[in-house]
Image 1: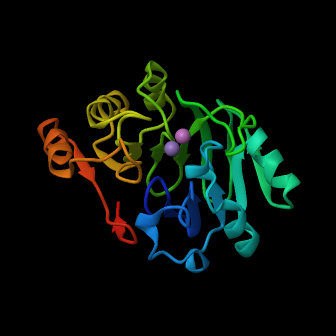
Image 2: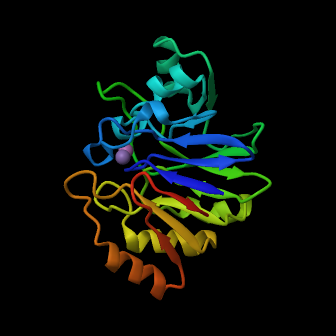
Amino acid sequence: MKFTYYGHSAFSIEVSGKKLLFDPFITGNSLAKDIDINSIEADYILVSHAHDDHVGDTEKIAARTGATVIAQFEICQRFQKNGLKNLHAMGIGGKFNFDFGTVKMTTALHSSSFGDGSYGGNPNGFIIQNKEKNFYYSGDTGLTLDMQLISQFAVCQFCILPIGDNYTMGPEDAVRVAHMINCPVVIGVHYDTFEFIGLDREKAKDLFEKNGLDLRLPAIGETIEV
Ligand code: NI
Ligand code: MN
């Protein structure tokens, strides 16, 4: 499967011929200044929580592409007010069969408010099951024992985890998650964008390697095969 990184926690994955875009915070990220959001195609946009560094350019990209936004009820409500039409609200614990596969919303231990401070529902993660490879994107979260349930829901061939520490888990806890869910390949996100979340890449890669895991850190704009 093709994974394209757009910086911070923004990435897209092609699943069964559909383009799934996650947390597209791009124009607000100076590290992603070379990414043109008008060149990004999307059939679905999945938003993990209401924080600005995740909602990002969702409205612009959804309006241009007609992509369906999959997010918590409160986030969909906000987008509906702002004129977006293709919305699919979900709640934690719920799953739904889309044309590319199944999405299940998981808990995340974080917060979720819009930039103006208004309520954004609960933060969440996503498990995507499909005919190719299953994967888990945790969204912004700390390590939580709830993640023990993930391997009961699905065998994930890879996962996408925040590793910048400070606001979310860091590399040590991301290793614990990978072990907990029995997933050998981790794509690290949510690092270097802001103060306090700088990542020592070599140190992080060594730590994963010592634990028998593969940490992938694609460059911004890079597409990797997962
Ligand atoms: Ni956040
Ligand atoms: Mn964040």
